[in-house]
Figure 1: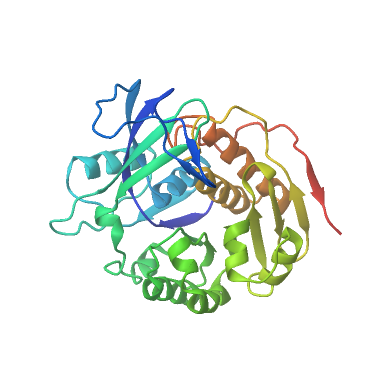
Figure 2 (figure 1 turned 30 degrees about the horizontal axis):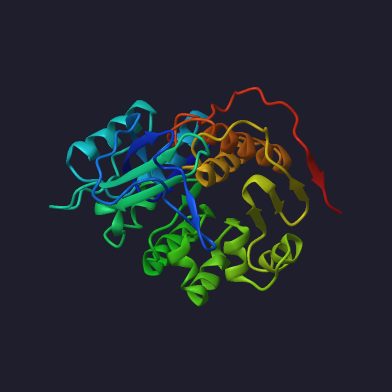
Length: 321
């Protein structure tokens, strides 16, 4: 068991679920949200209220694997914020370090979900999760975590630097899953990677950080900055190295995809949850893949999150020499 801080966003996810109105259509090379006429009134099949955000998604995975978990982020005092904190409390996650900005509501995402493909279009008002500069890195002195798991902070490189430097000062390891706004700050991002122990990106993101087109080439360049690197490619699987072992692997199981929301969070937090429990690098990759597969097989980013004692079957995974 480890003590893990999950630093990132917290949102209420409102799902609008339908089997035909949200089917995508192609216009040129771009997929567009489907069969809705402007000005029309549309009947949908189902509505569901969930809790999302990369910070809370990851925190739930860690908690279900038996770790001591602290969520660190901004949440409003409105009903949406109460729903976020109630879920975290139910999962046994420490919410005492949550910051409640004055007169700012909790972030909300409206997710238009096509039940046939599992694809979704997300409309987000980030609210309290639009900013992170008010968070205090000195909280880490009090928490004394073994790991700091960080998802996107909306390109706030100064806050990332403050937390990364504090983590290194107190001997805390860092796993980082940057977002598109961090990738736009390439020079600053490369500087931050010096403090990162585990980096998770997808193939497109990797190609924005370092030169290369094929996975092996991208991995080779990234491991010059971070010892442990994982590059995912969605349904095509992933490649990963810890500096000593390198693996290529596909998806854990070919299950119907119901909702891709939280897939990346499921993989990254699943990997770290297993690694922090003493699992081997290979087994941690398998658990991350299994967690991601389970997440996309359910509606909502948390309903499919696995528990750490879940029995897993073997999956195709190849060690590369």
